[in-house]
Image 1 (spheres, rainbow, N blue to C red):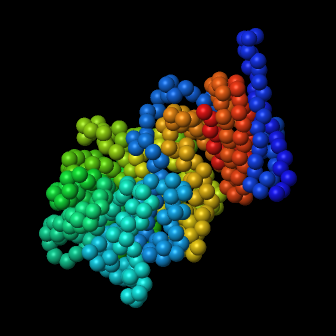
Image 2: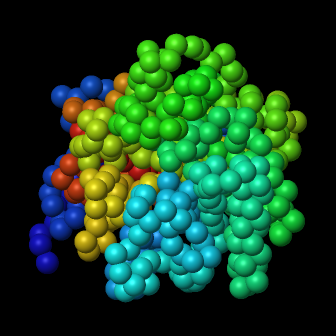
Image 3: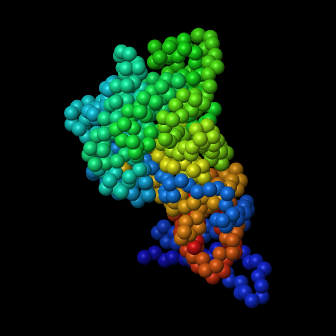
Amino acid sequence: MKNCHFHSIKIIEQFLPVSFTVIFLFFTVITAGCATTNVFSDTKYKKLSVSFVNESKSGLGSNTNNQNLLGMNNLYWIDDDKAWGQKNLGATLSQANVTALRYPGGEVADNYNWETNSLENPNEFPKEAPNASLKAQRLDYLEFLGHAAKMGVTNIFFVVNVEGAFLAPGNTDNNILLYAQKAARWVADVKRHGYHVSYWEIGNEPYLSSTTYSLTPLEYAKALKIYYREMKRADPSIQIGVTGPEGLQGKGFAGLLTEEQLAHVRKDKDFCKNERANDCAESVKKLIPGENRGMPWWNTIVDNAKDSFDFVAIHDYSIVEKQLAHTNQIQKLSSYLQQSTGKKVDIAVTEWNVPNRKKGFTNTADIALDNAVKLGNYLVGQVNYAIFWPIRSEENSYRALLTFDSAEPTILYKTFKLITPVLAGRPVNQLSLDKDVYFLQTQTKQETTAMLVNRGEEGKLVKADLNSVINSNVEIEQLDVVTEKVTVTNGKAKLSNSIEFTLPPKSVTVVKYK
């Protein structure tokens, strides 16, 4: 065994009645491999202060599912039989406290035939397997549900094919009904095999320019009503999810165009390929002048189909610019939906991460830090589930949960595993301590927890008021997302008021006390 050294963390003395004795708290610092670095109380750093609040004084409300909200997207052609078998995917996900799973993936859902576990158009993404052996290895929905059951995961999201109804030859209205009935057969087949899938999303990102067949909000609302009717007939207990932009005012790509402009883009699928939605819209407007004066996506959905959905599914691939912005955006959408429908509408973020390489975001450490902040924002925004994308990906391995070849944990996995105890609690305080440091405090019946995310290049010295906690067991665990080094600090105080500790650069810190 290596020799281990001990360090102290300073307790800030406060004025107390003479009948009390001021007790200084000393912690044992245990680092991975018994390293000896003292991460605490470095006076060269900028000083920040934060007060832990009493739960009864919190105005944040409670998270609706009262459990860890972290979920994962299973990509059926990547997270396949081999991944779930040889690479023991289920055990790895369980250790990260994953409580929800989504199938069969994202964009693939609008090209997926559940009855044959194959693609409707074999030449479109992600392309059909080149031979029978590889096709058989792709995970079918019953295999997926079996693995989820072994994990104890019962919060399952399925995505049904809606764009296929608009791409199929023949009358679109007839096709929508046929595809809705096919989705209803899927619901019935799940039930027949003794499983229950609670959440069913109608299509994947039909509002984007990059999707196979971008829909207007009116087209989508029309299809949504028919899918809702047919699928609820198969099982009234399921929840139907409507999808749309994460922002309340978003129109979606097709909503930016006139009918003539949209027809041109649909006819030439390579028109403005790889351009962003707004840039593509400007390109087609130069060719065919005109402006769409239509309403934003969510207004149109509510006006035309407010009784045809039970929850909302949004996707979020944005960076963190303002540390509380994601909470504010979700709360605005939630408030609008409640006011306009007359009921509480749950929100699930069924895909999220940060932008891909094309947008210049490739630093894995920064990706981990931004995603930690986003998870905290989702919790405070009362998101039901935050289903991360992807578990594994060859092209996007730098922002995946596990490595592609060996399914080993990445720094994102390690970050999520560290902060899930915080996410399991009731949020009572969320703050931006400065432009780089995010703070979230939560509460369970057993303990108070908090996470502090330092996204900056410099360390910070934090003075934390623990609200005069008596007989408190305190634990501080820190993860340096650059070196992946973990430091754990344990101690016990009979009477503590404040502590000082250092947040290393590019790090996540979790504080727990009872």
